[in-house]
Image 1 (cartoon, rainbow, N blue to C red):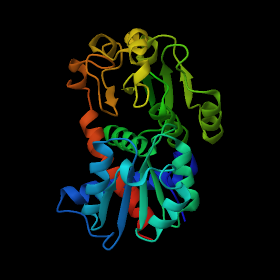
Image 2: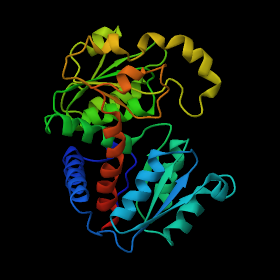
Image 3: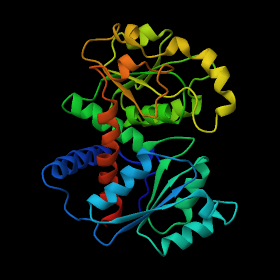
Length: 305
């Protein structure tokens, strides 16, 4: 049985097949609707963190494919508090075809996978966000006609779970992630080592300035400076991160064909300006919509059998 916890758990060939399946499912949906390939299948969506895109894209993805998804909030389970994660995994496995979990601690989703007898999908953890990375790759793939190998993705801001997933995507799909952020907020050495071990090309670099980072970029990517669970650091981060804002001046330093991505939610006026988020090079809403189609491919692969 296969889970979807990290891109590093999957081969490059299998991940590329998932992207191709996502493209097929997106076209099929736009030209009359998807076939009910998951008819009779069910997905439990376990949430510790609130969500817009994750909940609705998974719920609608299951519906489009003929299946059924339902929300299980933090007060209903209390993973590891009200009931052990092992017990939750084994109970849910008797009710549903698959489990999607959006959690704080990555060990929680790993333990769900350890004890579950159905596929488990990481809808987000504090370690990585593989479903978001697949939507990102799908968006880049569409923009450049599948020509993704060797592309440069410039990431500005905090070395967080989204950055880590982008680096794992770079390792698996053959593009290069150029990171630029304040000292003390870089990705950890173990993450970089794991990505480089999994990569067949040079997949990671660090730029000293934002201008250097975007100079040859095909994609400019940013995320919120303060993620959920970091609220106590918000004021400090607002003082440190402004030089890494993605604004019109910075984007003008990039090649004209470069696109701008943001995994959302965006704090407009902080990490990204309205002029860029709503500008002609922005693909952030196409990227958000692609969560639906990338995840449908994952659901179809794991639950179809």
